[in-house]
Length: 262
Ligand SMILES: *[C@@H]1O[C@H](CO)[C@@H](O)[C@H](O)[C@H]1NC(C)=O
Ligand SMILES: *[C@@H]1O[C@H](CO)[C@@H](O)[C@H](O)[C@H]1NC(C)=O
Image (cartoon, rainbow, N blue to C red; front, side, top):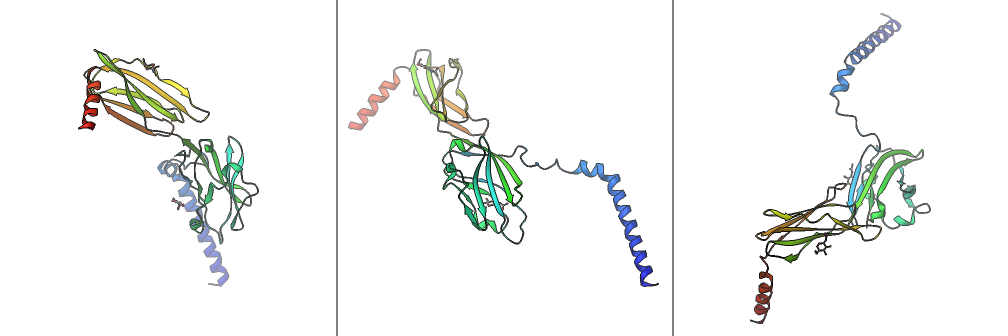
């Protein structure tokens, strides 16, 4: 067989194989799609990162690595478009960086060599919330879109407001939360009067304080307050024993004063 002819045969076989495999793929493709896990999030489809005020967060972003570390732009798209970090020619460039993020955003330098261009934001403010884009330069191709929610939470505080013969009224306070949480109060036995719609007080532009009252049966021994932030999944629970009926708190106070003197 001449080399020329062998070549023809080879290319013919190759073509046949290609046609066959394409045909197979085509026939089976519906099954192929069915058996695949649901499509990966296209950039931005609902990726959310939540973090707490004052804390640090890492917004994940990775890229396949070329021969060198790429130029990276992190920006916030909403509520206002601004550059959060610009990394060019192996250094951070500051001219375009928003004042709000000064000293607070970094790439993780030890990770760059692996194509990990995640952004670290420290000393988080509630106003840092928004949609962030991770881009590769040149071309500004968007590699990742993420929504950051910064929440504020505090330990709920429980206190007894009043004792009466038939019941004890307690109040739970969730001070300076953001986003607004739900507040639930319950005792270890029945509720007498679910007096309270929650009362909301806007502390400042950043956070809300919520208080709620509940009147429980006098025999209640324990009360629990549960504060739940739906958007971030944060839950804080405080429990308190109820000392007893009307006369007891004062007695206890006297006892503890006596105790101090003994
Ligand atoms: C990127 O670096 C951060 C910080 O070290 C780490 O938490 C994260 O898992 C890394 N991501 C990848 C994909 O390696
Ligand atoms: C709870 O009860 C106290 C005393 O009756 C009242 O002053 C306060 O406004 C009530 N708070 C709420 C949240 O309803």
